[in-house]
View 1 (spheres, one colour):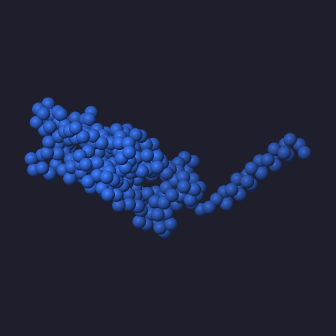
View 2 (cartoon, one colour):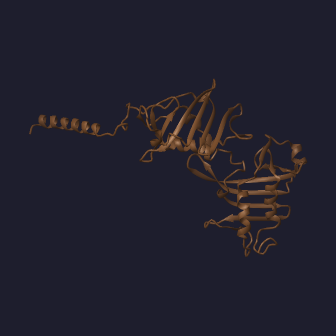
View 3 (tube, helix red, strand yellow):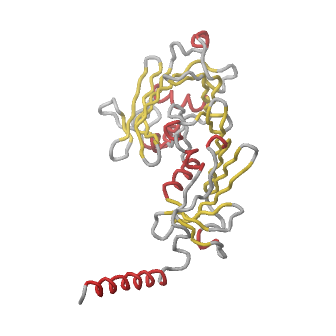
Length: 327
């Protein structure tokens, strides 16, 4: 067989193979363009507000003169280590492909009643609404649609994970004592001359960290665990404590110091150990809360009295099996 004949046969084989692949590609799975299409594109400077609803959780973030904040009952600055890059991701999400130009049955893609809705508000009160649906069969992408756009796209799962985490695990600053109780591994309480510490071992069982021979009353400890996540009411009273307030509010020499070690989410999937030290001062005038501050932070805070007194009492009356409250 001549070289020319061999070359012609190879070209024909390639063409036939290409045709076969094209004809056997399921409808809606091929790329509509040679490059993955942009879902939408806007300037990061035009984004003024972001709201993410995921299942029964919802968080709103606003761009203020002081930077991005979480809009809760009070404005809380975002954790920059986790927030960095979020507005860039939302300014121009690039899809993997267009699956269908129109969709008759949205329920097939988890978009009839989407569990995640993302609203990006731009200057001029314009809003882009994105619906995040189910994962694709191979688990590498989410189905997504945009309001007023009939096309069905897929987008990488990492983008979807970042968006859902904004609602599920809001990027609160690590000094803000509002964490999941199960992420706490250690707590110590010092009140005047009394000091006590507890830690969670590799077996996930809490015990005394500094009292050999003492057994923790696990039944009593079950009432403590929900409180490990932080105060029920943690309020930022002022962004900066004055020198005079340190003295008058009992924060120069606090009677109670609480140290907590917990696992804090960082970026998308990584988690880092964090240490938080909270100092408690005097009760506020109506005794419903106490003044507080976090070591290394300028904020004047208040914590609800019920939470603080329960944590303080761990040092005054440790929950041992042979304590006055134990068995």
